[in-house]
Length: 75
Image 1 (cartoon, rainbow, N blue to C red):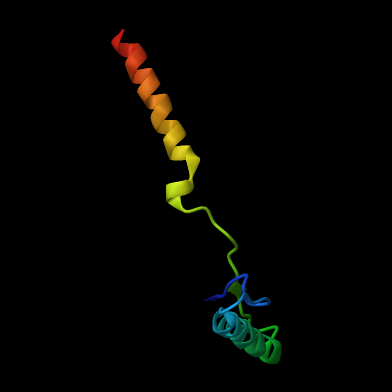
Image 2 (cartoon, one colour; image 1 turned 90 degrees about the vertical axis):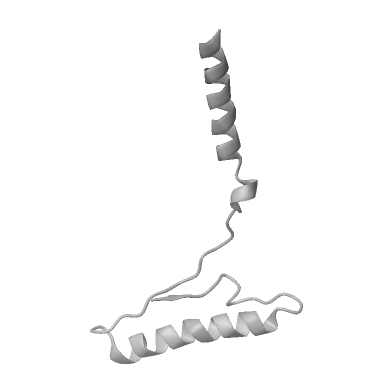
């Protein structure tokens, strides 16, 4: 099991080395599976964009709901 990136098939300015290394990892995973399959399998996942925890609105919403409930219980 390998982890590549959605950047494997594409490149951005000044990021060619990253794209090339990720594409190489995809090929390195595929080659043994193609040669030795179906008994041997290779898996390479390419996670896409994620939201950093700091930008995730859910914890803020939960905190505001808890605060509102707590304030209502005090009255």
